[in-house]
Length: 155
Image 1 (cartoon, helix red, strand yellow):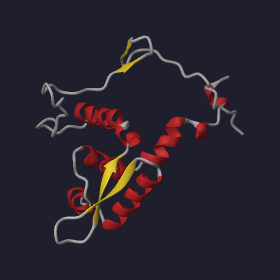
Image 2 (cartoon, one colour; image 1 turned 135 degrees about the vertical axis):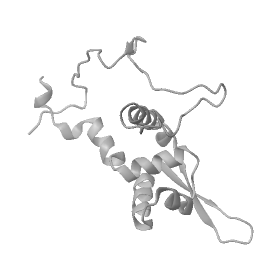
Image 3 (tube, one colour; image 1 turned 60 degrees about the vertical axis):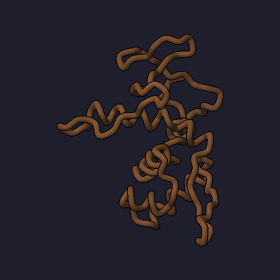
């Protein structure tokens, strides 16, 4: 079956894009990965309108990417932090891949503004793509897409 004959809306890329394909959503995820968990801190750091942030966080909660966790500082009312779920944490390679691509193709003249390092050894982290046999897949490696069990013909 030719790829063009398949229903593209059933594709996992399309389904993922509906969850994280918005730039504010990606930036919220980036900040959550970097340890910013409170609404006010997220709003300030991102420079995003509060209603936009509320919608993005609600969507991420509804999709099972983020949990809303209560906390209370002494003498203050209960508030909430936003923590990545397992599904959310599994998006880390996506965010790191976007960071690497941005560093390679969009960094300014001063170079990349941030590095991700392995906390235990201090060396930079990068994303690698490998097949199930362990072969490294590079940007010039030829790949093919084949229909999976969930594929359906378009139309």
